[in-house]
Image (cartoon, rainbow, N blue to C red; front, side, top):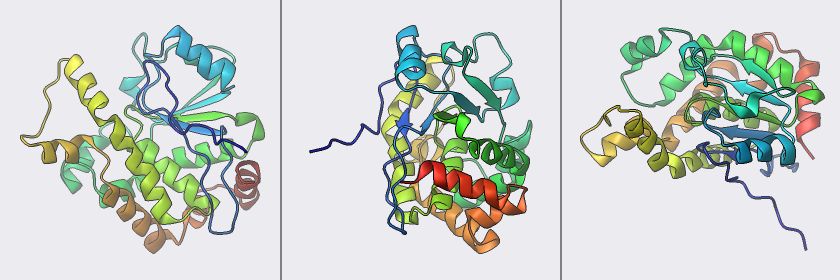
Amino acid sequence: MTTEPARFIDVEGVLNFRDGGGYETTEGNCVRWRRVFRAGALHEATPESASLVRDQLGVRSVFDLRFPNEVEGPGTLGLILEDPVAHHHLSIIPDGGSAQLDEEFGRGISGPRYGSYLRYGADRFASMFNLLADSDTYPAIIHCSAGKDRTGVSLALLLDLLGVDHDTIRDDYDLSNRSLEGLMDRVRAAGRPIDGDTIEEQRRLYGAPPEAIAGFLEHLHSEHGSARAYLESIGVSSAGLDAIREGLLE
């Protein structure tokens, strides 16, 4: 009898740390466990949790999707990102992009807002997936601040490339809502007020509404055909995408 690895991993100081593997594909394969992890910001990881990530999980690479101003100050990277772990800072949304998104789509998460990431972050997505084509990149962490929006779109692209069905991708995205209270606690601890007058409004602003990632996937397929077609259009080679699939599927 075999036991599957835990999807959520208790990494003290890090929100929403979980494994992106274990999902079946429409072709009958399975995404390998312990190859790609997703998380919120890593800089508050304790020494013990940094050791867990580096030594027990064996992480070699970190894809940091945060804004430039989120990584420029002292202490914004943390213990996980000491040598020999490679740090790839790939800000999916450029400086000023958040305000532009608010003007275009309004505040809060939505499918159209997520769809615009493909336009804003094309060069960074290309860099990420070109690196993911290299077997030496793994195991890897993909993370942003809360591990749900920029990270959620990136994992949706990856899982779509691997052939995971959209309902499963939506359900994986929805798991970020388990970390909602922790995220709001961090907002309060930083001295920032919680926006939204009702629980429903707060969940819209801070949570991970499944309809948003469903809308993103619909946009991806209606506008680009598939994750593979989009990634090829921005400069990731077919051989590189095949290498990602070969490395992450069993």
